[in-house]
Image (tube, rainbow, N blue to C red; front, side):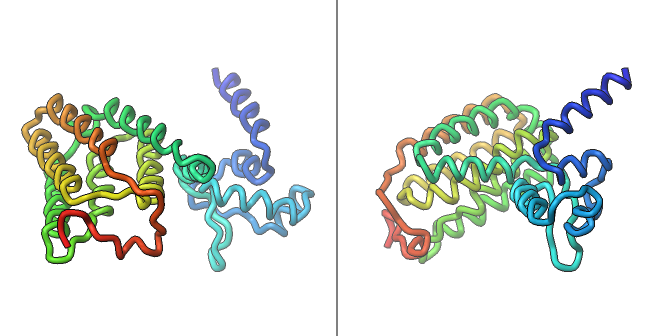
Length: 249
């Protein structure tokens, strides 16, 4: 049994087309462990520093390592999100319509893990969701409306904060990264935002009542709002702060 696991481990290592990634696996490094400098690795592995530098940049972009002046190169905790984010953003740069497909994936992932995630929420988690709702309404009902983007993201990720499924959470985190990049080019009027946060309040009400079926139904209903959101062709990120929300001047 152990022999089979070892053989599989070695086969996977051979599939890693990176000497740095192979080094991490071969030496059984733990998250936070220091990786030798490029000059040290070059001597140990008999590979040029320039080649290792290229591999290090790839590993950094994938979120495998941290590279800092004082601490050097360190192996990070496994997180699929950086690699997924990089791939998705490349796709979106070529075709913005991919966002709608990824948004559909996000809805299915949230729905699939809804019961597991919501049933694990603690009282303090639900209180945090309530606080996000309060802050969002404060921004929307002020004299100068502020779109509660951060509260929106934190609300949805907060629902899944107790979910022990790193792959699902990476998909969801990446969705919000893309949302903040792409949705800045979509126009939201005040009535849309009010509907969104009314749904959020209802979802928390139902979660607190342990009515997980109804809370899932409310979540699915509220995801349909985005399809009816008005759009404009282009708004630059630099000009985003000056956008006027329709419905209140």
